[in-house]
Each structure stands twice: as structure tokens, then as C-alpha cells.
Image (tube, rainbow, N blue to C red; front, side, top):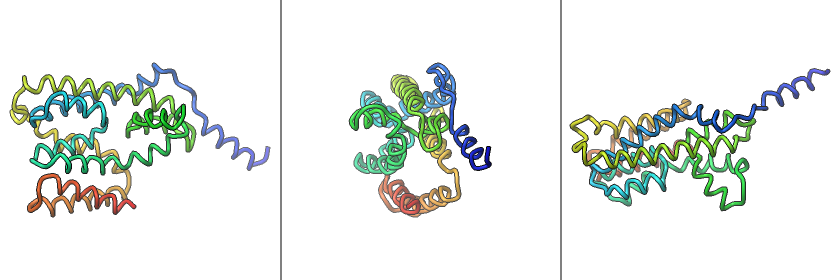
Length: 234
């Protein structure tokens, strides 16, 4: 067997993945789901403490399903910013999902409408697991859907529990939960800083936010940081 043929076969074998059962996928995603549940509960507690109706908090988690964007929007509202500014800041942070949506489109079943709906389960964690389970250049659709649905349930249930516990716990500052705003946001964004380019974008955005914070309304520094980060990432 010639060397080129051996290399080609090695590449094909490297691209093959053993199909895992639904239970195996759920087991692999369980630690992530636990972390997502805890973050969801923290979000529910803090959102209710920011005087948002419990039903709107749960609805936000059910429709948005994006921790970093929701924490960012909540931070804007809790700081006295407008709802429009909060939506703008969250939307900018979610622009990255356009790229992951394009990447997983071929791996999802059905027509455009069904793929668009199923694509809402593609978040950072489910996308990463699907890439690891799939062939080179083609994320595994089944892993994406099973993991995404599992994490979606954990996020929404966590939010519901947090929203119910919020009035019981009272002021989150008493328990130190107010630190969950910056801590939760950093924890959700940290895995994205996987290279020098990403770190440079983060530093640029942070510098702009710090420069705008003293003299702009709440929410504007975060929105400005997102715009600069996107500009540097182009």
C-alpha cells in the first residue's frame, strides 16, 4: 500500500466516530447540565431581586436560552438601564451563534423551518460536544440535539426554582449573590477566550467599557464593549 493511500485511510479513520447512545450522551453532558442549572437558579434569584416579574424571568430563559446574553441584559436592567439597551447588549453577544448555526445546519434534520427551530439548541456547550462527537467539518447532529435539549431543560428548571426562591431569600446581597452578576458573566465568557485574538477583543471591549462607565447611562458601556469586540473580531 502506497504512502498517499495510507495517509488517506488514516485521515478517514481519524474522522470516524463511534456512535453513542442517548444515555451515553446524557452522561457526558451531566456535569455541564449541573453547572447550567446552578447558573439558571442564580439568574432567577437575581432577576426577581431586580424587580422583574417571575413569569417574565422564566419566559426570558425559555425564549432566549443564552446565559451570557441574559446575565448581560439583566445587569443593564438592574443598573437602571432601559429595556431597549438591555436587548441590544444581549443581541450583540448572541451574534456569534450565526456562525455556529451555519456550521450545524447540514447536520440537522428537516427543512429550513425545522432546522431553524432545532438550531436554537446550539449553544456553546452543545456545539462543542457535537463537534467533538462528529466527523471533521461536520458536527454530530444527534449529540447537538440531545445535549442542547438536556441543557435547555436544566437552564429553564433552574430559572424557575431561582425565581420561586427569590422572594424567600430576600436581598441577594445578604447572601453574596450580587457577585453572581460579574462572576456568572465571566464564567460563561471565559471559555471563549481560547486564543490571542479572542483575548485581544476582550481586552479592547473591557477598555471601552471602563472608559464609558463614568459618564454614560447604565448599559451603554456594555453595548459599547460588545460593538468594539465585534469590530476587533472581524
